[in-house]
Image 1 (cartoon, rainbow, N blue to C red):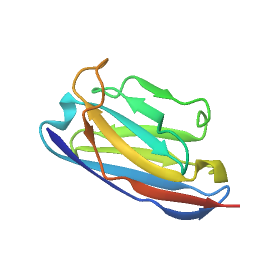
Image 2 (cartoon, rainbow, N blue to C red):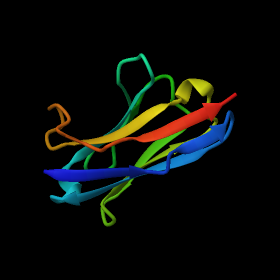
Image 3 (cartoon, helix red, strand yellow):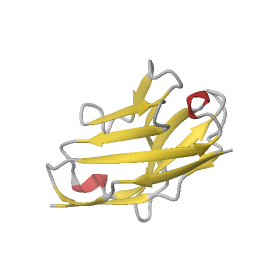
Image 4 (tube, rainbow, N blue to C red):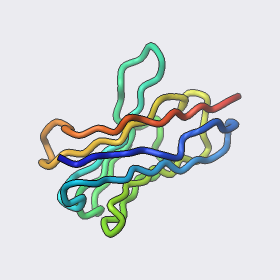
Length: 119
């Protein structure tokens, strides 16, 4: 198991930026594919961005393409989500998650960090 702790959330005005971090501990971080998810009040959790073990493949939800960037530093056991041009619709609790196999369910989750974008 890998333990995940998110940080970097907060309150920001529309058009602003935030960078979320997710620090991993426990098992070898570089063995895990990582993802960022979010859940807004009254809505289902949705995937925001994913990155594979070697960081040479990323994928994004259509709603964040061109605004968000996922990256990872395996030496620091950390995955990041750079969020630019934030919109009120981005308001949610953001979670990072890990999975060992590329097409398996995400099995390890962080506790989440709140992102609030004011208009």
